[in-house]
Image (cartoon, rainbow, N blue to C red; front, side):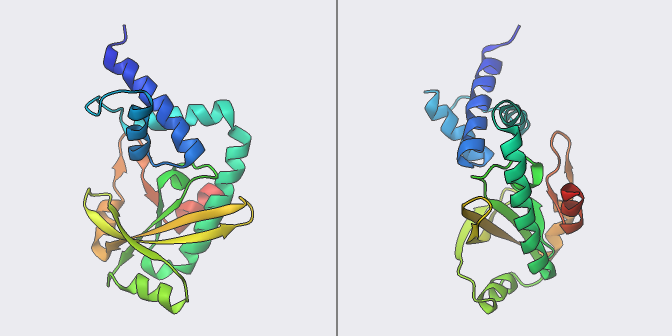
Amino acid sequence: MRGVNNEHDDMIAQTAAQLVVQEGLEYRDAKRQALKRLALGSRTPLPSNAVVEDAVKEYIELFCAQEQAQELAHLRALALQWMVRLRDFRPHLSGSVWRGTASAHSDIYLQLFCEDPKSAEIELINQGLRYQVTRVRGFKGEDVDALSLNLQSTALARYVGLHLMIYDFDDIRGALKVDPQMGALRGNEQALLKLLG
């Protein structure tokens, strides 16, 4: 028999999944927003990302499988263009575009591994690109700089957020570890090309 926490896990995960697909929220924000929508207390235990991931896949399969597959292909092709453009910084794709659960509302997250943390920013300046610098939570739980741009996508008829997360050159070692529940959490250009077939 399922316990109360499992019932809450299901409700939170299903609500979070809808927010991920329809609004492009990342899992952490979607789970917190789901608590508010369900009028659950802020101390309510949250489901794991793996549980939310399963709920997202179920939601896509039920409500928007064909449309989402096309949107994902466009986002991955756009990510690949930028990975090639920023190849010197060892870009790795992460987030929902990498995992295959992205929709038209999702942003693209590229993790750059730089010998000089300012080198990627200098490259964007040299290319005449406008960006914003923010601080975001990195894959080790620490805050890292992110260079954020808005890219116009004619295929999706919207602007797509591109976030370049800046890591030290040596952080690549820890980045390649595989999560036992969710598999590889990021992939390089060659790995993305395999996904694109």
